[in-house]
Figure 1 (cartoon, helix red, strand yellow):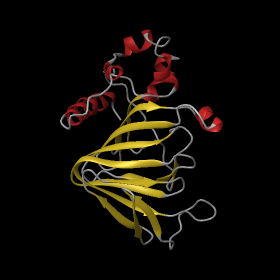
Figure 2 (cartoon, one colour):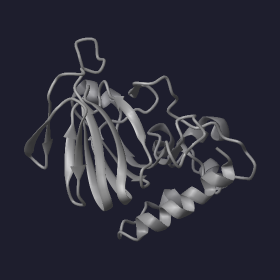
Figure 3 (cartoon, one colour):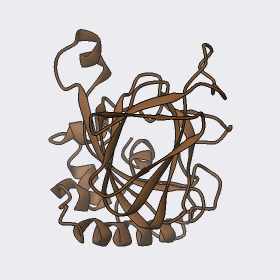
Length: 228
């Protein structure tokens, strides 16, 4: 993706999020220079990989295959091993109309996916087999706001604004917005996008960036390169 396109997506996403009354934390608006200056006093922003995240999964077709994310808070796996501390994470995301977030699962993360507003959020769901792959026959059973919903393998679950689904580790899922763009909330156990995403197809989690202009704000995938 071109950095100029990423800058545009950030501006558009910020306006879309604000249209629903959701206000981003102050660090969302730090410039790259301020990010560098705040590495010591705000180290948790970087170690927990909080911030902007825009991906086309390395496929260079964001409108068809992609997702906007912003990690608002995130704990540490070390605390999960101890069973105490900050064991949770929160993201705000945007799925554009008919934009696919491809089929994947998590080894560790359990998550609530919440339709915060816009169109319908559609999820295609599969259970996992004994080797962790997709089970093409097993019935899918997931809680939707506390009520169990049962679907055939590959069934489509459609969430209206205000509805949410709980996905436990191992549940395969792909999703997209139907009708209109959707603002998505995610509340989960500790999130690790570097190691805890297993995709059905051999694709990447992050975008390859063409630095045609300077960044307005850094992405989480920029931190190592830009901040060292």
